[in-house]
Structures are given as structure tokens and as C-alpha cells.
Length: 124
Image 1: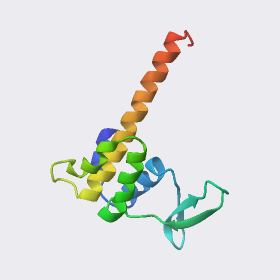
Image 2: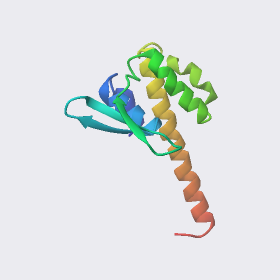
Image 3: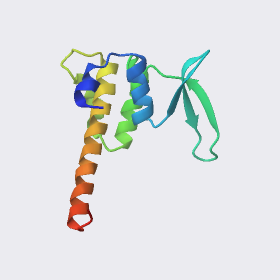
Image 4: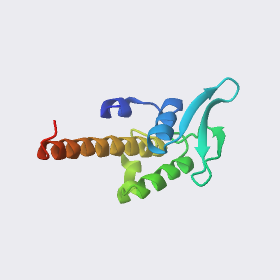
């Protein structure tokens, strides 16, 4: 996804799905009866349960889990991410979009570092 695509997303299912998959690392599928569901896996024993997709971009209290996740990833300034857009976005939406933007920037930097290393080692 690009920065423009992320900023253009509206709060709701698609933005929630992107956060669940890209940031939280969950598998998201559509169930005929339950709608969008998320697979939560226990890292200890590999067991899993299916839960409804959380409204990350619609509920600030749920968006707090996004802040917790990005702080774990090293983004200590995440508590200030509600300010994205200077009031254009709701707080939950701003948190989700900021987190996704940080993630694409992190991936971009990792690609650059990989390319530099690859070039330095003479590996084409």
C-alpha cells in the first residue's frame, strides 16, 4: 500500500482488516455467517481461536491496542499519533493510519538497507 492509499481509506472494515493483517499479524477471513473474523494463535502451543474483526479504526479504546503494538515495535511516540491530519481524522482512524504509515516507512528503510548491503557485498 502507498501513503496515499492509506490516507484515503475510511474508518471501517477495510482499514480494520489492514491493521489486523499488516500490523497485528493476524489472519483475516470472511465467514458466511460471522462476516470478517480474525485468527488468534497462541505462540506457545499453536492453538488458535477465531474472533470477530475488531473496530481498530472506529473505536479509540480498541485503537489503544494498536498503540501498544507499535510501542513494542519501537515507536515510543505512538501515543501522539492521534494528531495526524490536524483533526481531519477521528482519533482511532489517525492512530491506525499513522501505524500503517510507520510500517510502510520501516519496510522501505529495510529494503534500502538490504539493497545497500547487497551492493556492498557485490551480490547482484
